[in-house]
Image 1 (cartoon, helix red, strand yellow):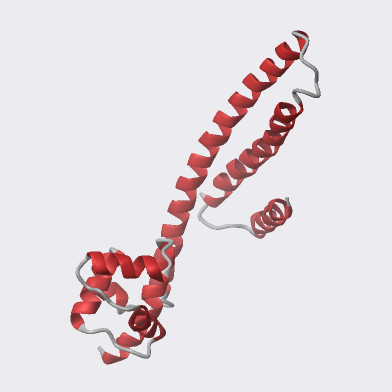
Image 2: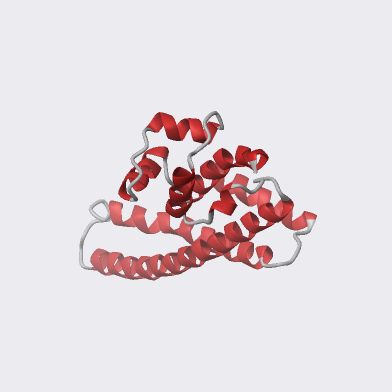
Length: 180
């Protein structure tokens, strides 16, 4: 057991980061759970220079939404890594589905905006007065491009294994949209 305690700190950091929490959020939640630890104590536990007391480990696990056993697992164990990849894949697919729906909605609203711009111009409003709306409509074309890339990525990420071609495609997409 003592040997597995070295994994507690890295696992707390991993779980906290998966939740998107800075250390201050973890401290706040620990206090709400009845364990007011100071920042130095949590930093030392995460760094592995201080072992948590049993009550601290139990409360940390509860606040992070796991069993104490998960805090004691080797974070580089192949089974642990496979679970992490599956969780990340599930979260990505969920986020991508939400993004696709939002982009579809944005595209519908863009078309409505374009129709209103045309009607306004036909009604005598100058293109100068409509410049901001025209710029907004043009910007959402990028969102449409991202939706197409997201759909392709969803299709490719659902395959059991990713071919070298798919990996290269993914790298290109990341570079393409990382620059924009």
